[in-house]
Length: 595
Image 1 (spheres, rainbow, N blue to C red):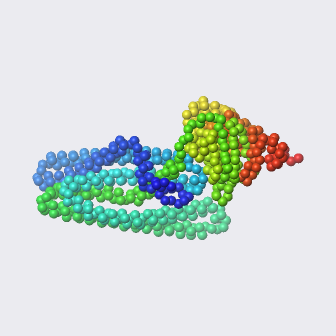
Image 2 (cartoon, rainbow, N blue to C red; image 1 turned 45 degrees about the vertical axis):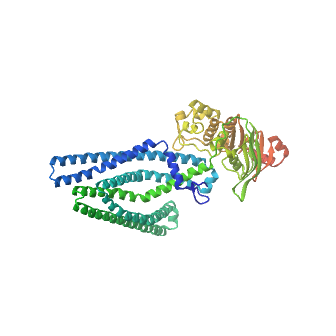
Image 3 (cartoon, one colour; image 1 turned 180 degrees about the horizontal axis):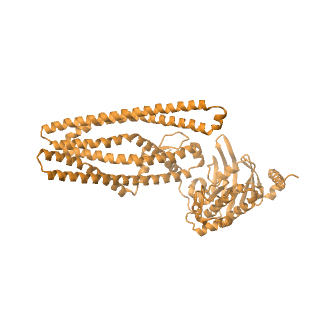
């Protein structure tokens, strides 16, 4: 944990402290100084224009008392109308500019969080729980976005209005500030009371709503069981109980709100009364005119709405700041784990070597034990074994998806742990049995592997893995929509798409984890030939689903209970008449069928 991290639960993703949040906001707003200055200038002008109407109205009062002309009154009226229109325009422009600025900043923040999230070690996400990361990427981002739309306009306009109005009161007579000084403690106590009572009640209200929804959804989903066992009265009673619980917390929330409003109204009464008293004595001492006192009263009336808006969004602002600390916490996690690049791939004849590798999903139950493995340049190695032997785990560890508990993995003499995710992906690419087709065009899906690839390169990659037959039948070629609600791809076609991504990435080492297992007997031969084409010219470790695929490898490794128990060519292992020979005999007998 760095200094930028606040204490947190051991397995949860960290929550950033205030210093880290400020640093991240400053980094996000870097280069936006001109836009930020434009927002401030617009808000200042808008707040200043808002003072013109009260000033003009006060001048009208003095004009009437001093038997001024009607022309002067009309002129002041036109000034009020013009100032009101300009005030509305500048205020609206300020809100638009500030929302655009901060929404853009949030977009950059979201991108950094997403990039960090997908680069986190898998076991780190699993320890924290995927729900924690998902809630930060969805609920917390939504909370900050909502605050930008509501809190930012309220805070920005209110602060500028309050400051400029205080300046205007001071310009009239500094003694009017006494009313503000008198009322500030009342506002402070009101906010303190609200923040002490409201958050817990709101949280309990949301929790009660969640329990009520859970009861309703559970009853609807299990409707058949409800009817079969005549559970409707019991479940209705439960739903009613939870509904009344929601009502109880909602009423408490409304009571807290009303008491808060009462405290705000008390503060407003104290302020107006003190202002009237100050104005009375100033006018009596002929230190101020009636019109100036009227202007002061109107200035103070203008403060009520922005102060109320500012105070009423305090809890929402707190919620947004809490969400922001969780978002920045993810970004800081990536910064802590990030390492520098180790340079570009300089040779395609690199060696992948694992030494004394141990790994377990928990420290007390190891899955891999003391594994040594060396993948020579251009060598094809097949990894076989019964289900649960640890083949998939070893593939994930060698690819850098999971971090070994002990041992060392080197690529061309460089420790794999010293590489960034991007650098490691250029050297070692893992293709698994579980293939995801991303929603969008086929072109955008392939571009994930190589953003700089042109259409000809993408088509060549598809044809390399023998996907040309179905690609030629697509309604719009590379512009065909695939993924959810798009053109459906069969499991075999999806695997060929994954192999085409491998060709586009073009790493020196490829690891295939049962990447041809979903083809079925009809497509097994074709998909195996697709895999062979994708692996041409590179070193490969293939977790073989079919022993027939392993037979043609340069070397075969047989795993059992997390240990490599046999190694050699197909012919050598058959001649040894060991466990591999037994597996081969059983697999061959299964293919021949019953005698």
